[in-house]
Image (tube, rainbow, N blue to C red):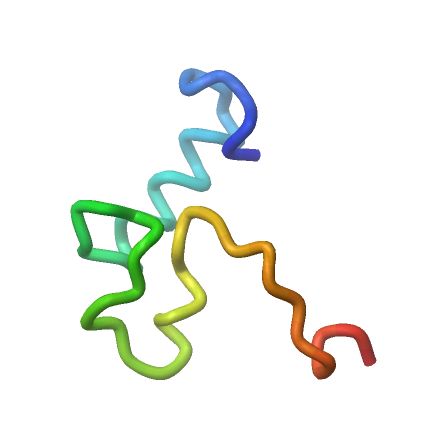
Length: 53
């Protein structure tokens, strides 16, 4: 959804969730995030084996 226009409802909802979970200025950074919170970064093209099962 982050590819969509910044005023699209899905983009706004996604950014709202991201902003509540990731306090970093650079939203692609997981610096300072702990455990499951590390999942909340703007871009992550990584897929783990557990996600494919």
